[in-house]
Length: 335
Image (cartoon, rainbow, N blue to C red; front, side, top):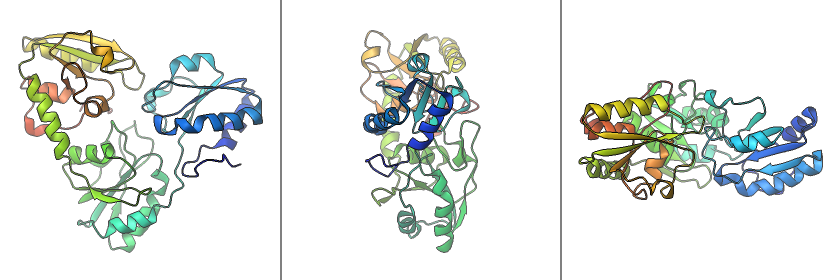
């Protein structure tokens, strides 16, 4: 069955239709991440025609498997969540089905290109869930170019070997290698691995064919500037997410206690969607983010007060050395 749209990602329409028919679902929810939302109307049209079910598409932002639309879930018989693999702490309901939208793009050409730019012998392979099924192919290419390939296993929040999330790079720390090759688009994941492991990371984009070495220096400069602006802060707002896969209340309590230990004031702020506008009314010297770790990075400079990560908060209070600055992660254990 053709969706009449890009073949780059598999939305699994036949599987979706079979699940709806098997369960006799009458009202069905679709939740897409931002990059795939444009595909939702056409998929809904095909599924409605094939099943007779009513499709409701979530219009709210979606930042990952950690961000299930709980409001929509209450209104439908089943919910299909696209673009992410299920997390251990997002198993809210048997009504949720994860469609990982695996990529059909040929990764071999870009891996072949990257092989000539790799300097080490032992290469750690990392990617997102969209390309994780292509890692054995990547290994074949690297080994044909005289490299040794390793694919590591991360903690329980990761569904597959070699998989990284924007908030979890544990699969990279589990590998013994000289450097890493990241297969995918965007900079955040490979930058996180670079900062987490202090090793060289090459990023190979199978869509553009571009191969580049990741340089974390810009992010480090930005984060150092945020820390510097917060050194004289006396009052902190500690952000806690109400999203199932992002909620770190215990961490927030421990950070509040740490602030008190250093004679600072700190208040916990529970919020679902963290945006600069939502925080305008809170008059604090700096925020500390325990929600999605990408918020402080992607929205740098847009919040009404500096937004620190928990690790940066420790630096501000003198509990951590500047040289030990890393990106925040949501892992099995606090980083």
